[in-house]
Amino acid sequence: MAPATHTCTCGAVLQYRHDLEKRPGGITAEWTCSDCGTPVPGMVAEKIKHQHPS
Image: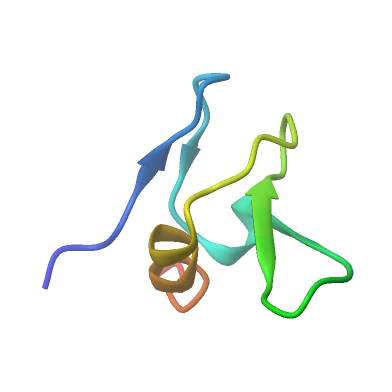
């Protein structure tokens, strides 16, 4: 399976957990771009957060 990636509106390519920040609070986790704070879609964030650099 191909690795999941997401290109943020700021231009950052989110590929690994360190590219994401978890927002506190809420019932479900909210993930944002670690560079600019733009929300990342939940399904994409769930895939990205489980990937590790080789």
